[in-house]
Image (cartoon, rainbow over all chains, first blue to last red; front, side, top):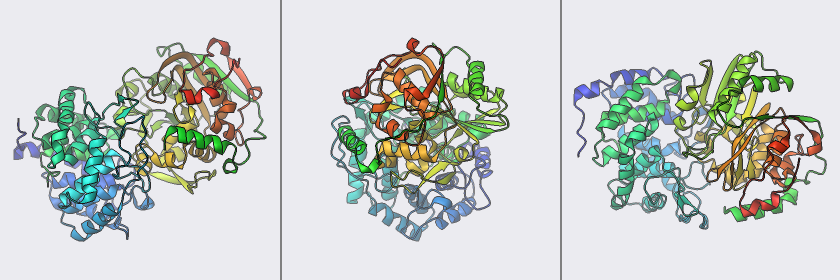
Length: 294
Length: 321
């Protein structure tokens, strides 16, 4: 069953969430993960995306974008935060994704150049894992091994920019499919150990599904979609619900009940539980806007 | 890196200049270690833990305390993580001893979602409202000089609440580890480093060498107190894929290496054969059994022999008690 776009009134019901999110924004223009923290790249970028996909005026994202643009290094990368701009460069893919939506062409181009110049290390295969360690995806830290989440974000950025056919994107999708757990889903990036499937995570499964949508590989993810659908009653966390909704609704699966639960979870979060990056992902999921589709 | 290659490299390093001398003169100091019986997780251990901490001279009154449990990921039925009852018992003991602030913080190694670690209702629902839970993966960090430099990393980006705590209490789970042999309080330091800088898992530390990373962290971050959750440990292919091994003990000490060495002996491992513990003995007291002053229950009540992967069987020994 197709997931209908929410009507305006439903999206207007998100206004209190927008207020709660914007209350976290800091005078420097950025957003912290949690109240009391300093501005970080990921919550700032995902908050901008949440504003883009919601009823809030897009102009409210400008300070966030200015902050993120100011964080861009000469090599095009975006680091974790101003104090550690040489760390956490995996955020560059999120930045490219957001820069695309807001039409920041020059910054997007530099970020894409950095993404395309980055490759995770490859290793000889380890018989214990049964995965193809010769495939290169994207890493959390430059010069280390590839993992599901940074690879998925790089693929999303490349796809949105029309570079889904680039050889790096093609290899990245092979990487993601290789890391899919045989019985469905993804975790951080090791599908099995000693012939035993490892457990999937809801958030990385939703994200990996988004990254493989609209490509020939998407027909090989049915068991992962089914896994999320079958387990939806077990998913309780903000992060898990947000990325499950995003993953499923992009494939036209019914997310009505999940969205109701996500709404309830977001409504009942205590201040010290409110992770702005996860909250922003939840807002984007509830908005129904297909920001992950090119 | 494959595990066998890693182990081969580690064995070579044990005898190589890269690690310096192989602990010819381990630090010697009398290190009290207390064993408290905890046959299951239904007992409230607050009073006993507070009493032992006070007897060990841990001054908590008016201090900011950060309790660092071990949360890797959640698999139903597998004792991977420090049990919430142990965390709560320790946190409430700190309040009892007059701590100004008590935080429970973790930068979980595999999962980004803090609902599966310190923000899980199973923990929050049993904690006193004055105890705050902190997701250390997502937040500010402080650059701390790497005082070991065995990894070649100049600094560690340590979660700000860890760097700013007056007292750091490590609460590891008693487990085998498929790369390092055992994982206890020193290895638990990995979880002081935010994932936004190191990733999920903290692959940079794997590339730099797990044992070198443990040693560098142990030199750079002071652990003030250790409480090992050995009520139910993990044997076999730990730290995730192993199976439950009830031991029924909590191991407490103000000396991290002494706690780890004692827990290792209770698990049937000889700490003098575990490379990173031996090397830690160059700068921390408590490796040698003769330097440990055991208190509390008789260790023979708990001493056992954990199953382990074949590669680690040469590290086993005993009986130690």
